[in-house]
Length: 159
Image (cartoon, rainbow, N blue to C red; front, side, top):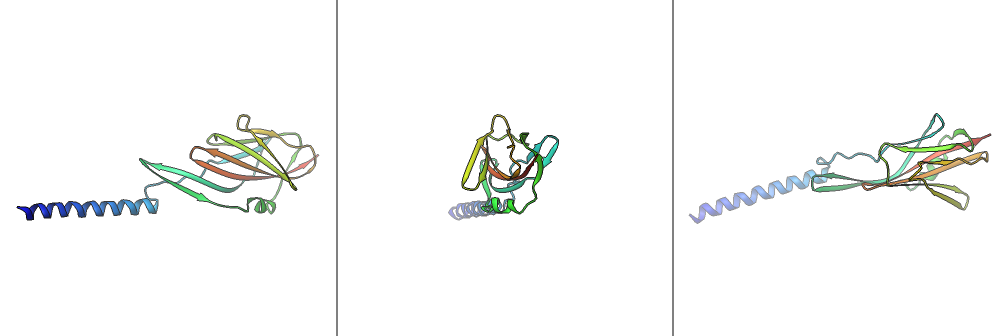
């Protein structure tokens, strides 16, 4: 009789170990997760949609009780943006920033030499472009409960 119990318990333990290893393999291989990228950003001035360069991001996905974080780091976003084409627009017009999922926070930064200016545009989703004719690179950081993403937009203001 004890042999029968020993075989039953051994079988149960082996089945549990196999199931745990299979579950761990699924978790590590992302088969349980359907990773999405951070929400899409659309930037426009008037009727003109501007190209956007995506930088670093971290995004958390949930599958039942499990969660997994995917991060991509692009520390050279500003340098990469400098080599991208600039969209020519008129100054003193609104730069409209829209996501397909509203972030909890949106901060736009402008670096001019050693001076950095930042605006929290979470409530308005827009800011006014400068009047001075010149090339500008706007860095946009958006935050959601699932993570964050950085973007860059190149603008050349002309009179």
